[in-house]
Structures are given as structure tokens and as C-alpha cells.
Image (cartoon, rainbow, N blue to C red):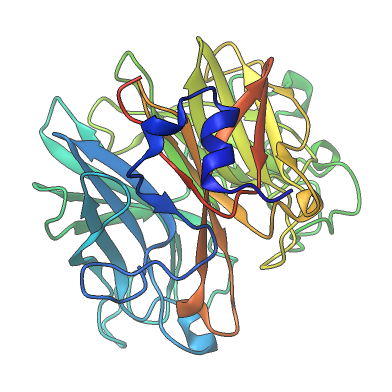
Length: 375
């Protein structure tokens, strides 16, 4: 059901006068930056640092080749989340033939940047597929910078937690190697349950697969890497080191056989939430949501958080991040992408308020809406 801005204000119990001069968000419409150019930050993440928001995302180009990295990751800054200044490319691909893991034509996706208070470094994690491997590499990569909008230096990529078992993995499944025939699976194509294939054991020595991902920093300063793993069939949650640059070997697996990707984690009223999608490639699907008393679980799957006519395709979007707004309404913004793989540069952004029905996060379509400050 469509809602205009005035109705949005009324629905959240605010006086109309509080919305007299709003900055209005229009999901799915072109979103120009300070140069009048549609923002180019797909699969993005958000960092709030010293009162400024930094939006990092994949820089896309026109045509199908834009589905591989041709430029790198771009950054924008804003103080109101509405008007964005282009800060340029902050992690650039290397030239073709360089032999770099991030050379032009590789797949670089879903950059997430966090600030490490111990080291004073800005740490970027992202999904990396080396050039020519399709999605078979299933690696995660890290880069650092001394400034939120400075040049990030690529450090390395890895398959996480090599030689370590998940903390909640059944003892009876711990073996010395794989039991399947080495086939490559994706989406919903697993012929049997993931546990029967022992994918964790198959990848034990070389590290676990890591595709769609996010980073979450808890109130105690601990950072967690959340990523689709085990041929996308399972979500893994891994504790990072104190400097946020590596994995500790402590990790957990959840939603075995559910094929979750595009995870976005946030915290509300002492509980932890995930919004995710199923695995249908570029095509949207019914969203997923889950709740837990701790980052490390146990996680309970909830309902599809999307409501309305296009709820079964997540309002034609896929989750990438949930942005908390303490002291404001809405308290959380759902950030999603509307992918256009035939012309990736034209991908649109679906930002919508999140409300709660008990512990169920709910996301409904609005043609336009605004943030109400100072509540």
C-alpha cells in the first residue's frame, strides 16, 4: 500500500508540523550526488564517524561487464543521509595482468567499513572472487585506511577459519576430509542436506567459503564477520581479532540448509536481528528475518519482514545493511539494492523505515518518507 509523507508522519504519531521542511527519501528513484550523478555505491555499507556518515559501495559501469569490478569501491559522505558528496574511489582495482587478487575483472562485492578504536584504523571487509573463477573462489578480503574517505590499502584475502571447527558443530560430523565427490553446488542445488555432505569438513583444511557478508561491531567493541558459507547453504558468524584484521578461529553456523545470503545485522532492545534474502541470483525473493539473544545465537527464524503487494520479492530489493538512528524516527533504516544486471550502473536503492510488531521487524513500501530528528 502506498503512503505519502504526511501519512507517514501521522502513522508514527508525530504532529504534522514536525514534518514541515523534510528531506524526503523516494525509494527506487535516481539519487543524485553533489555533482548531479546517480550515486554509485551498490551492495553498500554505512559508517558513522565523528558526526559524518560514509556510504561505501560497489562502483558499477554500464553493460554486463559492470557485474565484475572495473573500477573498485566508491565512498560518499553526508551529515543528513539525504545529500551526498562524492569522495571518490577509495579502493581501486589493479590493472589487468597485474596478478593482483583485486585486478580489473575480479568480483568485489559488499564492502563494509568499521573503525577500530584500538588501532585508529578504518578496516574494510568485502567479498572477493578472483578473476576468472566465477563464484568458486568464495573468499573474503580486508583493507585498511587511516581516514574514512582515504585510500584503502588491500592486505589479503582468505577463506576464514582454516583448521578450525565451528563451536556448535556436531562431534559426529568432524572428519578428516570430504565425503562428497567434490562437485560444486550453489543456490538450492544441493542434492541432500548440507550436514550429510559435510561441507564444513570438506573445507576444513583450506578454510570456509565466504560470499555475501557484513560486519557487525557489538557494544563491547567485539567485531563479527557474518557470511554465506557452505555453498551458500548456511550462514556462519565468526569473531574477528581485536584489531579487526583477521579471524580468531571462533565461529558458529546457523540456518543449515536454508540458503541465506545478503545478511544485515542490527541490535534493538537488547536483542540481535538479521535481515537476509534467499538465493536466487540477481532475481529478488521473499526476505528472511531472525532474532537472537546474542550475536552467537541461538538464532530463531522469524517471518518475511516485507509486507504488501510485493512482499514475496522483498519490494524488488535485496538487503545490504541496516542503519541504526538512535534518538530519531525511524530508529532503523533498511538499505536494499534493486539490481539491474543488464546495466548495473542503473541499480537503484531501496531505503525504507523498519518498525516492529513485537519482535518481528516489518518493512512496508512508501513512495516517500523522511527522518524525524530529535525525538
